[in-house]
Length: 295
Ligand SMILES: [Zn+2]
Image (cartoon, rainbow, N blue to C red):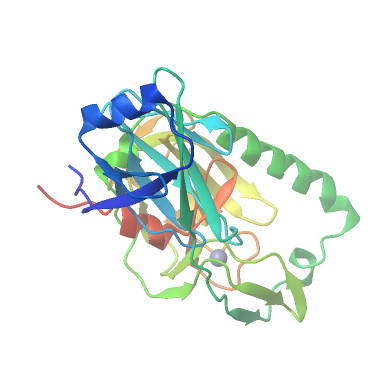
């Protein structure tokens, strides 16, 4: 079960409404006229926040399609759709609702900026910071396997039932931080790091299908990817043991792996990442948007 967010009313200003449109509005009983034009009260329920790295869960009005950046989003049986915002998402996002007669209703949203911290990490094996020529082929093949595992956008809707954290442990790394390894600035960190002893069991945060289970990738070591549906996926890094195989269904809370320090890591911890399609989003904001609440 999911908690419904309060209903917010967003306004769409019309400059040149046509007659069909006006009659539709009158049927909805939601017209507010002023001297300049018409204003529709367009109700939309959102879970999650419009903030960089955030995940939004919306509900499409009955019979409408939903477009984001020109792509039609899949809808759950309850009419829900999801949108993820990148680390550096621009200040304005737009959702377009499309009626069966193809009338389009664009809605704009302000996206809040975040400040990301810089994290200095020393003592990483130097070949994991500046990989030797001989490792480049392996790194490219790892990266292709990961891309492939996240490519398919499935109609599964396990994400709707909510997320739990994959283990209990102090958070030692956050989404978006600029990372400096052995003095060399690298890609931002996109996961949430939980410190935990080697061998601590990692649980699936929500239901899904395992799309990748790799014993030893160059940077991420033991790695699992789970598809929660609609392009929303979890990735688990630096694992010492992998308890699942690609293609199997995992339920929320199921033990899928053990914490390790494989790949580019200085000590045992779990790095949990989340993607919406190829957009990296903040797992903590997913927990906030879609918390699992016991019935
Ligand atoms: Zn990490």
